[in-house]
Image 1 (cartoon, helix red, strand yellow):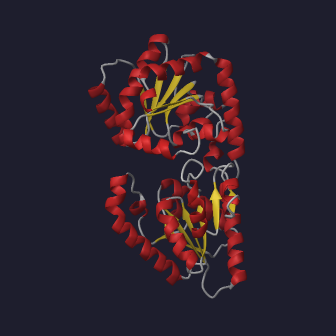
Image 2: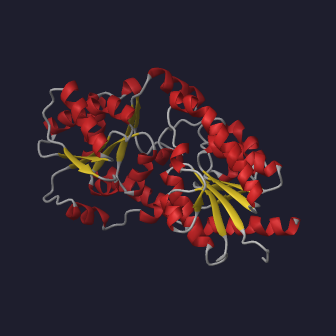
Image 3: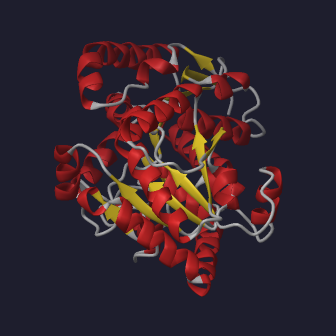
Length: 389
């Protein structure tokens, strides 16, 4: 591909997970396009690989209905400026990485202007609002899907799609992971290990801290030697958890709070109690049999239930198309019910081994070279751009 100016590829990432995907894509494209410039909105991983960030990625990291509404005027201005600069700089193609509320609108405007566009990470159309698929197709020339059940949904409506696998599967547990994780965490003996994952957001800690402490108390009455491990994503989360625990319950139960990610804790555990969200996929990739739970604002949960188009909430169950992990939501998520499910699962070793084998199969299905497959899709779209010039 010979141009007077270096080839420019637009990349727009909205948060840390998108930054990781963008970095993997850049690494995979470099051998094919050594002189290409990657421009747009990039996080630290992408910038370390030479991506130019025209605007801070943090400006897109807005969560919660009220926060989003408050920032809408600024986000609209940012998107308009980004679209204009992509056009002025003559980008050959633009990849929107996740953050669909922001990137799909940008992609649509760029596609209408004649630029090739790719949307990297399918929105959860399998769970709700399946009617979005034609609108996604109007925004992107191609969708890159992380899960193997997603392509058929797009193909049925004539939207080009490429399955690229899930990058987290590259770190999936193997047969020796539990022993290595326990050694790393200095867990000796044969005590039952329970992983408690309340969620990373402050609102989730508010709803789940006392629930999990009282659940652990009930488990320990039945299994006095049981140990409980909780990952703390930040010092702020740790302080919030401790405050909520002290204010909300008198339950005395030893909990081990561990700073950092949940991966090692889940690999070490016999059973997990995991708040619904991406952590349920982490649990499956860690081969950790678990119970999925969630408590939140009643109106939010009611809306989500009304919108769901599948009977499952947790990603492992969606991937399996059946209930592998029990799901206890809202009023059903009580300390008594969670403890009963956890104890039943712990005591049924054949069932746990069967679940672990199922999770291993899931990991194998998801474990492809995500960066390489995404790069192939980008190169194919660039070739189409060249043909149309």
